Amino acid sequence: SQTIHQWPATLVQPVGSPLSLECTVEGTSNPNLYWYRQAAGRGLQLLFYSVGIGQISSEVPQNLSASRPQDRQFILSSKKLLLSDSGFYLCAWSVLGNIQYFGAGTRLSVL
Amino acid sequence: AQKITQTQPGMFVQEKEAVTLDCTYDTSDQSYGLFWYKQPSSGEMIFLIYQGSYDEQNATEGRYSLNFQKARKSANLVISASQLGDSAMYFCAMRADRGSTLGRLYFGRGTQLTVWP
Image (cartoon, rainbow over all chains, first blue to last red; front, side, top):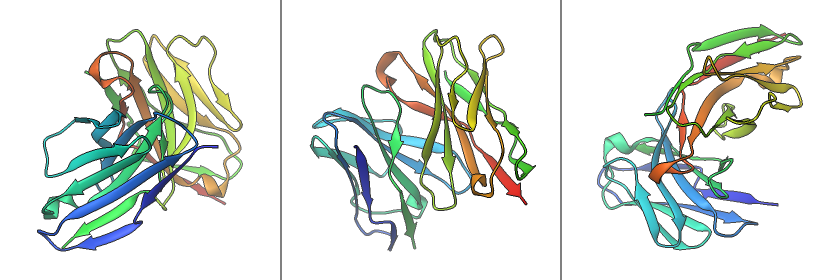
């Protein structure tokens, strides 16, 4: 069966520090991969999605970047965090754009 | 543009009763998908149920059913026999099936459901 791993679960980082959040999927090949951010009490905002290795699409201009170095690995990064980057980050996968399955999420606090 | 509206910020239901969570959507696409997700306090988004725009029958998954009214552009979630563990935030989402955003989900702002004994 397919599983998705996302880590770390929580992260507290100072302003200006770098960020690396990792997401890996097991049990499927060539999935679509997605990074979402959820502000407190709000719905999800799509940040990036990828349909294959090295193929990244950005939905909103921001301080973050994404990379897909391997078929089932998706990384969210920042060179210098801002206070506004705080939030709950969720990774998801799907096959051919069908049902999206989410990881457990990372709570990021930028102080 | 795709838009999902959930007009109920919070809902309360007594254990063992049924509850309906409202969702309306707006799209010019003929082909689309509708989803409901549950988000407990732990934060994980749990897929509950899916309805395709061409599906003639309402989707059902155990205690969950989706009341799909295409002409009204509504996709309400019905939870039968509520349980205390159903207390969570519930999100309605729509998938656009055309263009560069293939597979992208558009989410509503959610409804917080509280089940009381």
